[in-house]
Image (cartoon, rainbow, N blue to C red; front, side, top):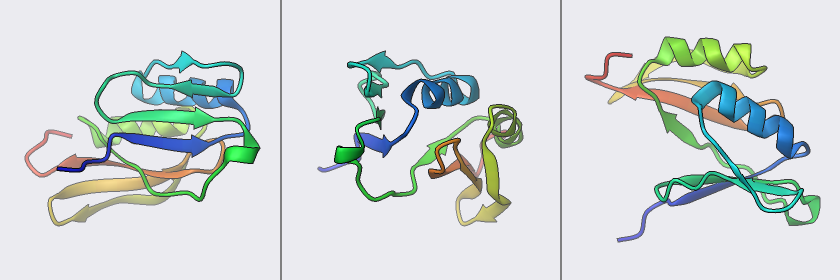
Length: 115
C-alpha cells in the first residue's frame, strides 16, 4: 500500500524555518549542507529545501496535534499567521496557517482527541 512518507517545502531561509517548526511543534532537523534540512523520524518526515533551482509547487500538509488551541498560540508566537481560524470538519477540527516563508499548512485534532 502506498502512503505519504515525506513532505518537502521550498524555503528561502532554512535556519529560520527550522526555528519556526522547532518552536511550534518541537521537531528537530538534521542538516544536509547549507541548503537542506530534514526531520528524521522514520515516519512522515519533512524536508526544507533552500535551493531555489529545485523548488516545486506547494501542497497543504496537515499536522495532527494534541491541543489545537495551544498549537494555534505557538504558531502565532513563532511568527506564523493564521489564514483560516479553527473550524469543525467531519472527523475533527483544524485551522490553517502560513509559516514565515509563506507555506500554508493545517493543524488538526481528530474527534475524540482532547485538544
